[in-house]
Image 1 (cartoon, rainbow over the protein chains, first blue to last red):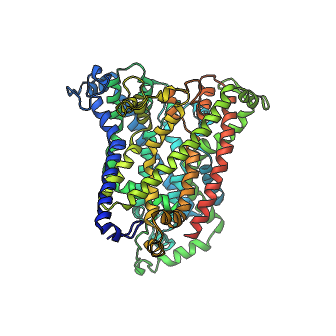
Image 2: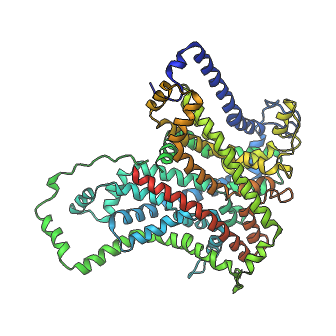
Image 3: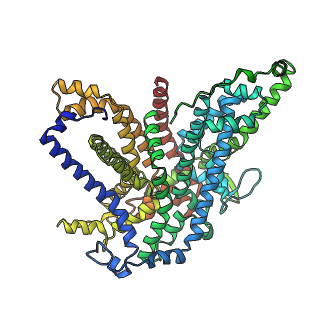
Length: 291
Length: 322
């Protein structure tokens, strides 16, 4: 039995309490279905209606003629394979680079005692205070013309990948986790002849699976959902991720086709959520209360 | 998050006899060289991340301040202009509109986005059935890309075949202009942002509510407290810290709103939904005025950093208690 909450189990056991409970329960189910599931249903079925039907008032709850034409048109007309592939490339690269560089940096800051380590960590944590979006314009100018080497990363996935590495939240999460690994464990490995890299690879990383999972999910979701930054980086239509392409194309495309494209754009993240929901929900719940 | 890792027992036999003098010798022999080697190894691990932070966080932050005082055109260099950017931006009629809209948006988002998830979490916490179902459903909109949520609601708000007006007609209520009306557009956007984001807030509140000791409610009930009094004197004081944290985070997040006004209303009608970040975007990419964009960025930066500093200070001190 779960712990005691606002309403006592005794009150719920009474006939009146029971009736009230099931009324509230039904109300919440209805409300959740209407406000969170129905819009999704409306989107998925809207794409299957004919262009006439989708514009009709009053609207039909169920498509009169189920048709997958909207989906196939979206796939071909809006060139969704290209944009989906771009998004996959951008998200995967950002995730991999973040894992490699943030893990290495967190390991160094936590265990290798670099000179000025405290100053560097302070500088990294200070970026948590700086609201990311307020810096997009100078960041854009930097990416458009990298200092010293004067190359432009515009229209290049590297323009998404490299800035994604500068993620203070994920780096701090990793560093805090590494801090908990006892020094003795690493020293023992060192005495056994393992180098720093070997220690990281065979001892630290296997112990850090839970935190690596959380960081991975955060990293993937962040890139997949982002809009403003890729909008700035990719002016070249062929390189745009799906989020930018959807908005750019939304003006001159039939409504049913646009809706179908919206559904297709949502599928990867929703599927990932349904697969990893336990981990994601647990991560949010504990992350939120513990700070 | 910070689940304790399994304690690893190490065989003492690992300390083989020939190894000990070698590692001891390492520490005494050539401390200078040794330290240099240690340092270069540490920095080898650090360098990738460090470069990315330097290039894409620290340098842009400094540059925002510098360009705010310059006339800057990419490719053809910079020229110092003092506070001219600030005065120009300040006299733009859109400036007042943008700040007013952003503050109103944040305030409305705080009212709706704070109250609705809290009440939802309170009710969900009392339900004994289908808990996993509710959690998944409430978080579903968060996983839908923000651009898709915005386009979806744009369609709902459509004055012709939009679902929002259809629902009002069904209930025999007067229809609304929603995102197309100058006085309703901003509220319409707040509804979208709340719908798309409240799942995370509900889950965090839910976790906070579950950590309240049941004895407190029992004691309150024995003292004759009714449900409202129990909420007032047990639930709210026990979750006060989380409430404060989430409010601060929400202020910081909603003041950077961009996607909804950009996708749904394009800043209109009559500048009713131009936000500060949208104006920054316009200055940079429509007017090609990077000095003005950076001047606006610095204003937003200063204001939001103050909120962030409070947030970090509070979480830091709370972290030390745990």
